[in-house]
Length: 284
Image (cartoon, rainbow, N blue to C red; front, side):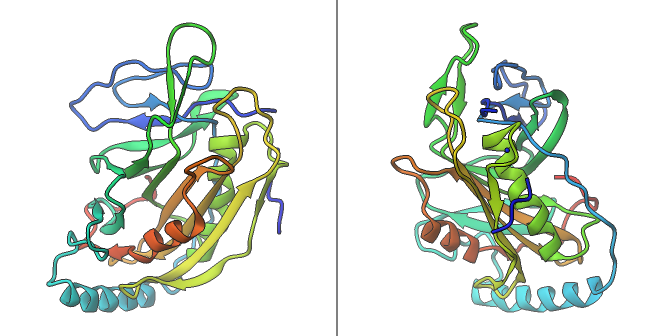
């Protein structure tokens, strides 16, 4: 295992509701902050991602995934909203032209919703985040972190997709983002307890090719009853336009009901392309 990165985690994640909805104020990890653009929930903060530009292979990767998407669409009666797993829910991100499925007990949010984390030392700095998320047990643990009467709800699992413009390739995305999610959500400001695996080439059920990386923490200080270790899996790939994007899962580990690896990989296997992306660019 590689150690890309280690004080105890603080609850705090960003959650941006779709316009024109204005979210009520809720706290983050001891720095409660919510606004019409961001709602702080969850545990942790984030690390800024640094990605380098690259253009080689974009056209080829886009063509390959477009052909696979066409074949998959035919198998699904040209309807990406139809789940690949019977009884599951489909999560569509029209901005990036992606889709995946989650079990029926998961909460699927609107595509415009932004969910992510800010830096615990600089709350104006967003470390990482994604859009069109789905939550598992969104009120798994609730806590008043600083005794001001404002309650932070901590999720047991979160999954979504984001842009990754400027990355070199799908493996580069996964290598950088997987440990960042773990650090941001669970270990801030301690990077030393985060480890990650090497990238693994992977093809989803619909034929989308890319690479994924698993990262996890071990030994996070229990600063409060909601704090603890977590893990992330990031799958980097290209959408039909050739843009680099990523599918991201992160969740708590070592607690009853935690999402296990088998289920995470089953969700990952449903990742597919869903039409032409609406907006270019590297953002979430």
